[in-house]
Amino acid sequence: MDLLLDFASSFFTQLRSPTLAFLIGGALLAALGSKLTVPDAIYQFIIFMLLMRIGLHGGMEIRDADLTALALPALMAALTGIICVLLGWATLARLPGIRFDDAIATSGLFGAVSASTLAAALVVMEQEALIYEAWAPALYPFMDIPALVLAIVLASLHAQKRRVAEGGDVGERPKVGVWKIIKDSLRGAALSALLLGIAIGLFAEPGRVYEEFYNPLFRGFLSILLMIMGMEAYSRLAELRGVAHWFAVYALLAPIAHGLIGFGLGYIAHITVGFSPGGVVILAIIAASNSDISGPPTLRAGIPSANPASFIGSSTSIGTPIAIAVCIPLFLALGEMVFGT
Amino acid sequence: MFSNATKLTVIAERLLQERIIEMLYAGGAKGHTVFDGSGKGEHSNRRGDRAAVIHDFTIVQLDVVFGNSDEARKVAEDIADTLFVDYAGIVYLTPVEIIRAKRF
Image (cartoon, rainbow over all chains, first blue to last red; front, top):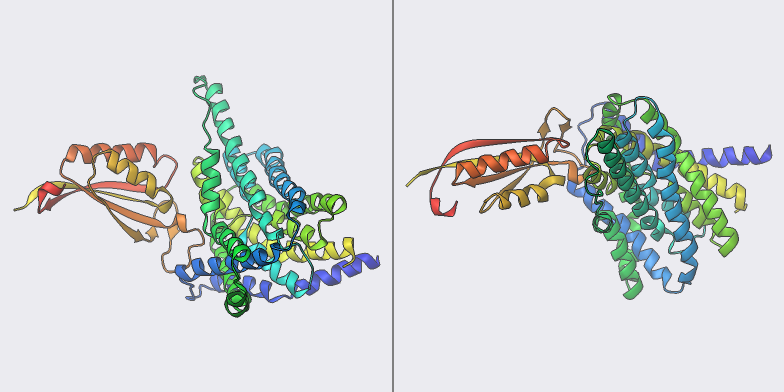
């Protein structure tokens, strides 16, 4: 009972974080039809700033880290991404009135990772002085890319089966440009900035520019980003009204389920190779997150027949707020409970 | 001084820009112009005044002037048949008068 009370109290403490206030504030502004807008260029720049800061921090710390310890958590991250997509394939895609392509694209997006959720989680964790491996944020692509690739592969196999079922010829095996998907993902704005930051942190001495520029501005920029996310969430709600209600249900539950899968696999890595409690929490939170910048265009190009209103509507309007508002405090509290930190 | 030509205009998501440009040049275009856009269509309202969380879903307008109207027609049909089955977008032709016809 005490455990539950502790859990509840730490959960509610997190709920009062400024992170969430800005997210809800943005949604409120949009709901009230406010004329306040953040220009596109500023948004693009904020994404760069946040990921560069996370990358620099990681890169500078990685120097003294033992990178062999990354192998198992990276494998767990990839497994999490794959399991999330398969879970959607086994549940959402089987529901009545749901088109297969829409379901798979949605699962792919929910299996992929959100840079903004990751940034928000790191701010809270640094506040709580929760220790995590410097390379933990670099688990992002290990989860993101397999999820997107698997979703696109499943969709093209399904399309081929459908053609055969309709009496068409088998045709050529559908060619999924896996390498192209990987290239596109790595070239995405968020991942490029993260990887460049890691490289600069690793090979140069960016200590001062990090201390004087990137780090002090991190929280402020994050708050603006969350406000934009809130506005976007509200404006995409309208799109969601046009698609099956199951998408809304999936978007509510999937982040929590995926986070638990990530937490469980992270815990296995914790027991076997000593993956840190903070790292397990990061793995759970990126599993709970859903891609909001690079994933949607990748899926839109890879599964053209999927209706973007279904997968982007459910992820942006419900998935992202749930990941930030519910999953960050939830998995921090769970981490506290399990590891007693 | 002036000679007749055909302007092909494609309005689509930025996501398709590269593929459209490839098709235009394969169909005989000698140059192109891209404009950023915003607006409202059958699919959705695309506002241009606020942050587009997904940059690739903002719209662009591509203009190409073809000296040969048959070429323009063929490319327009190709683009409509291959891309605008699954994606939002419009494509149209306008008769125009050009100077320096050799360039088109």
